[in-house]
Every structure is written in structure tokens, then in C-alpha cells.
Length: 498
Image (cartoon, rainbow, N blue to C red; front, side):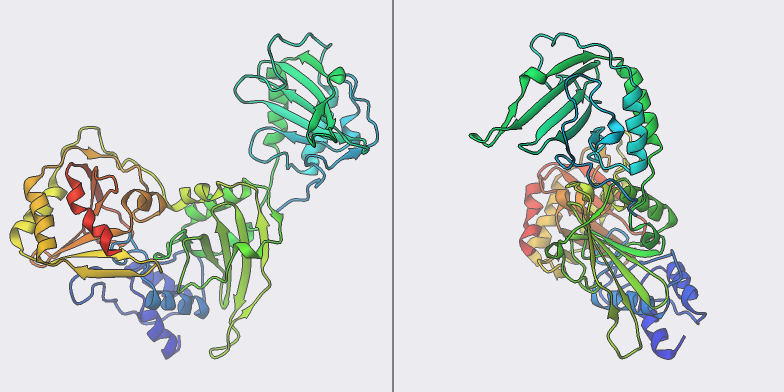
């Protein structure tokens, strides 16, 4: 490793064992232990990858992040593709010339295009192989003879899922929409409709409606057996296999990517059907020195190649790469590719990888007050020495010492109030999305110079909880205890700093 890179690498502040793995993965080099605290005694450490074999570009990437942003484990942080498919299997796509829709013999399902929706979030976007199997099953299934419409029942059965829908279009002057609905009580409705040119809506063709009663369990078993064989792979699997860091909808922490996390991300991306889209307005260029809360960004690659996989909360993804040419030249960027999975809540699924929710094995009514008592002891030992840390609108962390009145306000709270029970952590990783929704972006930090103990206090926005983050030997550990409490309105002034 040349001297310049060696110096850059040694600027990375992170646990020594993690740093050693990264540097050893690049080149054999002498290692120095980083300074993990600043001059005023408050923690300032970062963490990064233990996944792949990044080269000099990755070293510079991580070094730059360490120099320009407070990463995970810093100021109070938590330890701060697409198979070919039948594109016509969407509503209205299959314009078929007059199939017979007069009875449930319909037509041969293998001869026209339809959308089969199993209510699994894929919106009928299955592979051609799956549709071939479904067509064969539908053609052979025993639909029985028509029955009378159940009294008071609409087209859509008033029952809970699972239900199935099969839709297709026939004719074109105007087209007739055909809808076959299979409810979980065995009732099947077949309805046709066409556009009403006067109203612009759909006009039911009631004379062609049919009702049937089938063995739903047999139908469900057959369909699920077919769908269980459906295998999809997102366009991102190979990219994710080289992941070495992630910004999971945050602008303050580069999180590590273990094999377990990579496998989980691949599973989540593969759970959707991705189609390319023309949606550059959903993204701006990503700068790892100024990460954005708007994206779940995964950094991937080896050597001097880095690939950015950026995903919005509502299911849009952008992929592009950078290649380092030499030390002085700007990296060479590839064209961007954009995808969409039509899942507006996709970001919530991705957060399961990092912003996990656990109960910390806390039993209801637990009364271990050790962490809380440490805070009381601190205020009994000092007349000043606390500060507020907050995240500003640009994503930068700031800190300011409490003045005498503010310090006294906090001190008086802990001398005059007793906490109640310890409560489970249902808010996920510290300073992750779920956590911030509950506790915001402000915190109080205490440093006991005599005991060399560092403690961080979070106050819930609804003034019902105190979270205590205690000192840890590892930046990735989250030794946090949550207490129910009263009177926390007195400490909400910490929001004013932000």
C-alpha cells in the first residue's frame, strides 16, 4: 500500500478488528490503532464493511466518508434479475378477437393473454413458464355447472383472502373486459363489462354474468403448487453479492454488510418483479460524503470499481457504476438504469435488514434500574458537563454544551422523578427510521471523566419514554435500555437546538 493510501486508511475511525479486516483485504500493511474519542471525551467512532475485497478506490471511499461525515457509531449513532415475462399479462393488454365468454368453458386459456392475480403483491407478473402451467391447470380444472347467484352477494365475495382474480380483454370496438373472481368460500363469479361512452365508466353486461361453486381447497392447492415453483431473480443479485456497505435511509451512518444481511437484501429484492422505467426525476447523483435519507443505498464492487444501488421508499431503484482511472482523474461513470417494482411500501421491507425491531428479552414489569441510577449518580457528581447533540436539516451532526439553567433543568428532572418499568424496544436500531420517528434527532450526552463512562439519553417525542445508551467496547453493539417515565415534557427543550 503506498504512503498516501496508508495515511488515508489510518484516518478511518472504527473498531480495530473491523479496520484490520478491511485493510488486510486490500493490501498487507502496518496498522495503527485509531483514536476513538475527541478531546472533550465524547465518542466519535465509525464502522464499515467486512464483506468483500475492495481495492484502493474503496479505501479512499471509506476514508473520505470518515473524514466528511459522522458515520455509524459517531456522535450517538447506533454503532454509528428479471426473468423474461409475458408483458401482456397486465389489465387490458390482451386484445383477443371474440373468444367465447358465454360459459365457464370460456376459451383455451393457453391461446390468449390474461392476468392471473393471486393477491401475493406481484400483480400477476409471473414468468411465461408459470403462465403456461396455470393455463394447463385452468383448462383441466372442474368448474362444474352454473349456479344461482347467492342472494345479496356482489361480484367480489364478501370474504377474507385468499381470493384469486383472472382478467383479460376481448374485442376492440370497444373492448370487453372479462373478470373471473374465485373467492375462498368456493363461489366463482364471471362478469363482463365495456366502456359506457356517455359516462366514461364501465357498463356491466349482466346478461353474460355467471356464478359457479367449486372446490376452493383443490383450486388453492393446485395454484399454490404452481406458484411455489416460480423463481424470480432481480437485476441486482450479482451486484448485491459484492456489497460492502449501506446507507439504509440515513445520512449519518455507513453500516456493515455481513453475509446474512446480503442474503436478506437479495431475498427482499427478489420478492418483487422489476421493470425498467424512465424515471431519472426520482434520483439525484449520489455522493457518499453526503448520503441522503431519501435512498436505501448499497455500495458494491471490488477493486477500483464501485456500483451504487439506490432505492427509494416507494420502490424505485437506480443503478450506476464508477471506475477509477488514476489518482488525479475523476472516476468514469456508467449510464444509469432505472427500475420500478410497483410496491409503494418497498422501503419498509428493506428496513427489516438494518432497522430491526427486537424486544431485548425484556420481561414485562422488569425493574433493573442500573442504567438509570448511573445517570442519577452522574448528576450528583457534577455541576456541568452535559451537552445536546442534534442533526441539522442538512444531515450534519452538531453539539452544544448545556448552559447552567439547561443543565439544572435536566439534573432536577432526574432528582425529582422516578422511572417506572423497563419496556421492550419496539423501535428498531438506534437512529434508524423507526427509532427517529419516535425519538427524533436530538439527544443528551453525558461523559463521566472519573469512571470514563459515556451515556446518551433519548427522550421520546410523546414524553413517555427515556432511552439510555451506555458505553460499549464495540461500535456495533447497542446497549440500550428503555424506561417508561412521566414529566418528560420538561426535557423537550432539546428539540429547540435542531
